[in-house]
Length: 393
Ligand code: NAI
Ligand code: MG
Image (cartoon, rainbow, N blue to C red; front, side, top):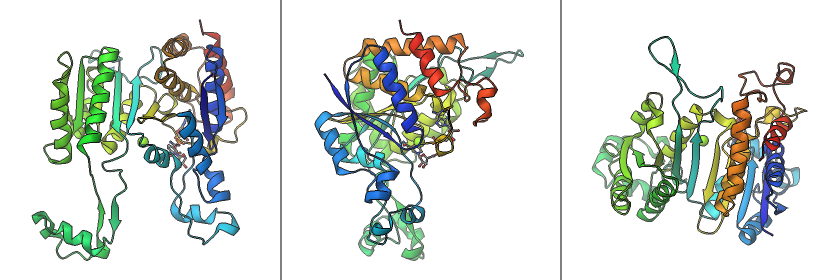
């Protein structure tokens, strides 16, 4: 039997992850789940939100299911450390970013497909007093380890860095700025990682029958890094004659998002632009309660909803948060390990519950979150899960 590392993390991660396991079990997927410690509690107790024992578990079992974690700003994080760990030089790092970097989980996939009947689906005025609901079905491939979020940045850059930058003629305009008044974030991309993410996007398009792949960057301004994406995109596209290569600029893409989102299929971007496009598309299909993702490397893969730990709902009993983002993330895990039939069964059950429209969590009813939502007719997290299980064929 397969072993899966279950990392619920913090807040509502602890609520939604067990629900996903409940659905998978009901769909006939049998596995052995081992618990991986991750999150705020371990930062406070051990000065490390991602303990080595959790890394070891993933190293051994390769597949992780992750809920969400809580991160706090530097000063606050330091204050919440156990007294005996204070002032010992511990620095907080986000454990999910840590996992992506440690295992080089460079391929991030974020599908954004509208479920029929979801009241949160994006609509457009049709100009005749009615509206149309574009059938959004986009999948964003985000380079997960380099680019703008690569972490290579400085405030008050060391002299060698400054000297190196000053070899560039455009640095002249900063000549009068003191280093202590200067902040630098780099956007470094490698051909290898760019090729991997673009190839992953084309492979996905081929496997799932998408007719186009869009490189969403800004090569007219970011001539070097976006330029690399487009150049590699054109090279890789030659190997896929049945799939068209499109390229869009990130800013224009955000505008077209609300004009003709149904036109786009597979989209591929650098780290930060992929973060932006995937949130943009997710907003068209229901937002955080529906946004799922996969982080895949050569050996290890971790599946997680896009949402965070939503601390304000952590203690709410019964819980009101939508488990669908987590359950869809579990479906991505099932696809990854060759259990596509069970993933399909679960997605079909989710689609049936949404289309029927009887069971809806507070976000689907556009209610304010809180204990009152249930009196107003919102389903609890568990009721939504039960409804999905009841539709499993
Ligand atoms: P969040 O995603 O936790 O929550 C924002 C709001 O979205 C919530 O207050 C709630 O109204 C709604 N929401 C989130 N998940 C939902 C669900 N499943 N169903 C219905 N509504 C849902 O983001 P926020 O408030 O910015 O951050 C809270 C904490 O989570 C922070 O400590 C942050 O650092 C962390 N975070 C962690 C992430 C991760 O683990 N990958 C990602 C984003 C934030
Ligand atoms: Mg984001």
